[in-house]
Amino acid sequence: MIIFENISKVYPGNFPALENVNLKIHEGEFVSIVGHSGAGKSTLLKMLYAEEQPTSGDVYFSRKNISEFKARELPYHRRNIGTVFQDCKLLPKKTLTENVAFAMEVSEKKTSEIEEAVPQILDITGLGKKFDAYPNEVSGGEQQKAALARALVNRPKVLVADEPTGNLDPISTWDIVQLLLKINEFGTTVILATHDKPIVDKISKRVVVMDKGRVIRDEAHGRYCI
Ligand SMILES: Nc1ncnc2c1ncn2[C@@H]1O[C@H](COP(=O)(O)OP(=O)(O)OP(=O)(O)O)[C@@H](O)[C@H]1O
Ligand SMILES: [Mg+2]
Image (cartoon, rainbow, N blue to C red; front, top):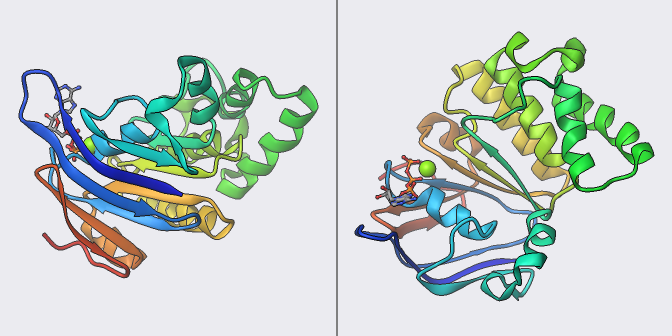
């Protein structure tokens, strides 16, 4: 479903961030991408939602070469991919519910659809009675659950989670990871970039290890070990 083919990336004036990366991710997989800071994890993920272009090589999504998309096609492509980051970037003046609904509004979904989907997805995330709180009124873990709900409400095929638990304590981290596993069980492909060794070991699914812009290991039931 996703193919990175001979991907290299050199940011202007820098040493290569990615060097000849080849990686295939199948529909429905849960893949953890691990590696030291600067290994190239975020750069690789950015190619998938076309925030960065490879210097050479091609990225395919559902057999389509992303570099061949026209500018006007990119928003449609990006709707296939939900994203969550360490800094969850919720809008501070909107409640959690409004934040999630907003993602559907900008995708021009019908009000009736929004009213149905938003409570459903918030329910899955286990946010309980916090629906109507503002981001600064809830914990980091709860903010991150809302960010996940926002990423998922438009039913993307793939969820990219780049250090989603970076600011969280181990209990909240495990909560978020269980949510990612649940989302994956429902059929969404999940790609998780993380430094969190215990979490990767506990997930016990495919692990891709990157180092200095290269993939150095790829194991079906791997552990975090560099
Ligand atoms: N926008 C940019 N301009 C120039 N260099 C960049 C840019 N983004 C990343 N880099 C460089 O590319 C390399 C890979 O960075 P990247 O952010 O992909 O690593 P990472 O594995 O995600 O690291 P971390 O674990 O710290 O998030 C690093 O050397 C980084 O400094
Ligand atoms: Mg990164």
